[in-house]
Amino acid sequence: MSEGKRKPRIGRLDSVGGVITEMSRVYRLAARDELDDRKAARLVGMLAEIRRALELGEFEDRLKALEGRS
Image (cartoon, rainbow, N blue to C red; front, top):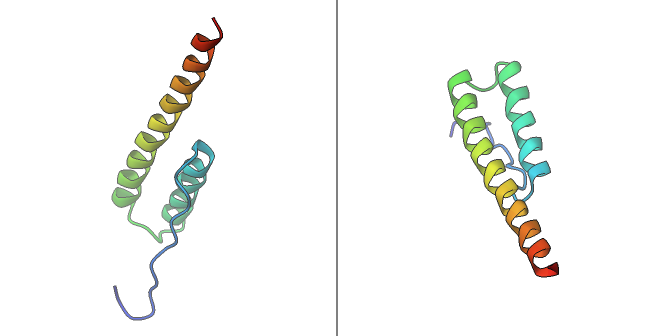
């Protein structure tokens, strides 16, 4: 890390909303040419996988709750 540059703060990634917020932040950085497009694409891809995992977890929790009501 060079002098004067600080590490970017990473938002919470424990909810779909948090992941979407982080995706938006990465997009804004890339749109302002503050982040290399290839790196931005890699990060957004990873964030998309995290989002899918969270959505699947939520789906499983809801399914279990429905099955428990039967």
